[in-house]
Amino acid sequence: MTEPITRLIHHPYQPPAGFAGPQPGVFKASTVFFPNVAAMRARDWKRKSGYTYGLHGTPTTFILEERIAALEGGLHCVLVPSGLAAIANVALALLKSGDEVLIPDNAYGPNKALAEGELAALGITHQVYDPMDVADLAARISPRTRLVWLEAAGSVTLEFPDLIAQARLCRERGVVSALDNTWGAGLAFNAFDLDGRGLGVDVSAHALTKYPSGGGDVLMGSVTTRDEALHLKLKLTHMRLGLGVGANDAENLLRALPSIGLRYHSQDQAARALARWCATQSPFAQVLHPALDASPGHTHWQQVCGAADARGTGASAGLFSVIVDARYTSAQVDAFCDALRLFKLGYSWGGPISLVVPYDLASMRAAWPPHLRRGTLVRFSTGLESVADLQADLGQALAVALPA
Ligand SMILES: *Cc1c(COP(=O)(O)O)cnc(C)c1O
Image 1 (cartoon, rainbow, N blue to C red):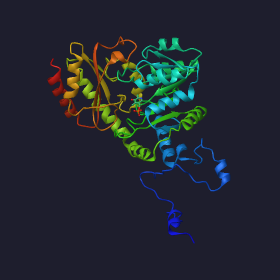
Image 2: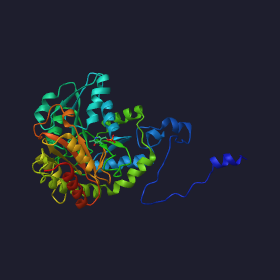
Image 3: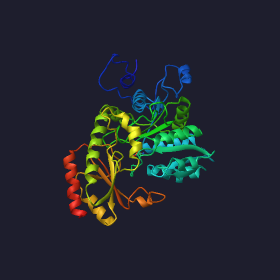
Image 4: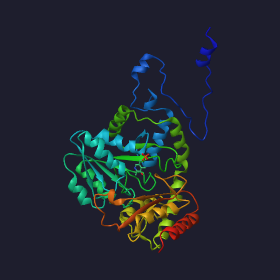
């Protein structure tokens, strides 16, 4: 007979099977038990047929991986602790010393920083290409090019590239294409079937921190593919780097995912309404939102996102930027951002609260993009507040800080 403390730990009770509720159960584990040594030796950490160790997956993370893959039109998915970790997982899995990676000039900033820092130190070179010129990308692909990053719309400046031509070019030249799919989130277009005839990217990296989380309170990323061999390569690096995610974070994601479509479209409508209003305000020299006719890459946005929406109006993330006319000083633009009350100063997007960030574009780009007016860039992301209240907030801050 064992002591009570041992009976407490090795308690034989098992709840009845067959429980079903709206959300899947949350399994937390570093240790996973095996029935015997033979099973321990036989189990394969790479496949979802069994469990070996918490880092390699639990029922909770497997369920989330399958749902993200379904959302994005992929077949395989690995979860990582942040969107940036997804970018790093892709780079480190596919590149080795002597290889080159091509990154669009309007890429998410830390993607370039990773190339300039860790990748360069490993002997991996990179080039920055013009996202709005497919010929420029074509000219930079060499036998050393092993990975091309794509991003649509571009971070901060929201130009929409000719994604179909870019994906086709990568396919023709036999180079792996990886899309940062955070903006589209699997809802604006299908990264694995851009033209309705199966032309897509090879890899989709997604900052689940944004729309899938929807709360501004969880960091997570994913890497989704359709090709099993490519997935296993990514998964091997994922395992070696120890890029697991926490069960409670996965639980939060699973709880938020069912409403992602409602949130995405609601924030889309709000951003469009505010972007159109901003286009009527004289302090703003330019408004950047791919659904606006005059925005760079609007026709490419229509081509890829237009058909995805039953209303025929296309889908877009709840982001837009303005370029404040160069007659205002950057101190005045800072004062405008400070004067906003509902738009909070903060990075990221996809949560319930609207956000604003002023950017120093000159320091972020190789050269000032010819399609952008001179001035100071401010990016907005819409939350879930009333659009009328957000517009009034922009109006009062304009009156205070940027007199016409
Ligand atoms: C936020 C973001 C990331 C990084 O996601 P984190 O979870 O914050 O690391 C990557 N790409 C894009 C386009 C993003 O907006």
